[in-house]
Image (tube, rainbow, N blue to C red):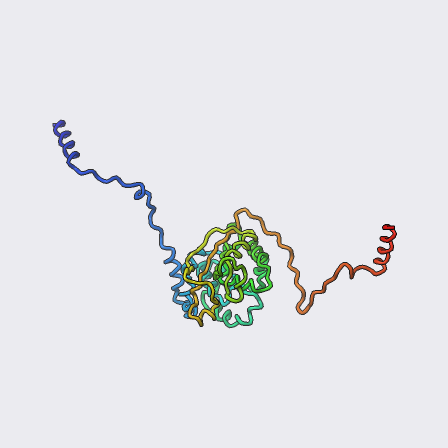
Length: 309
């Protein structure tokens, strides 16, 4: 009986077609991750966002921007040159009530931002936004440390049009970030090799300028985002909001998105004290010649002629 059973099993094995062996690719496929973009879309679709902000979404791609920032609940983040606070509010929503979003603007901008800023702080999501009115070359208060992320969104070219030491500004940001913290700079792209040529006329900046200045300030480039790229942009038209709106092109400029990081283990940047004159004061140039008593100059001429003789 046993021999008959073995023979039957062998016969069955020979007549059954071979089963496919799973390929290494199939067995190594990781489980699908949750759709991060959908999570950020939920932030963007919050019913209490203003209609004015929602009207800008098509050109600003807020869900993709938040995904690139990768903010998490409880983080501390700042926006430099926040304007009316469109992006700052999104950041505040992303970090949640346990986090903080800092909204920096240069005091010279406040005259035309006054109404927009006041309106921003009527929004429920502004509860964890802290207003910071400081100049760009010293953008964050010295006591503000260990930030997780800083964002400069389509403003870097404007800073380039002001009397601001941009590398110094970036070093100030570097020191405000915790090691491993991120600096994200987004702006409209100028043609390669144009440097700062188009910052005031076309409101664009050469990407290489931003790379070089951030790296000079101690940052390392960690990632680039393509979610705002537009290969059809000829980069020869004015991308400022008003001009682009009139041309029917608002939100269509080719924009780069760079994520830089403060390296782990990096020390604070040494930045000389920033000396400012009191309001209304004018600088006076004092030369060494003016500080010398005329009689001393006469004695030196006399002594000098004696030595030469």
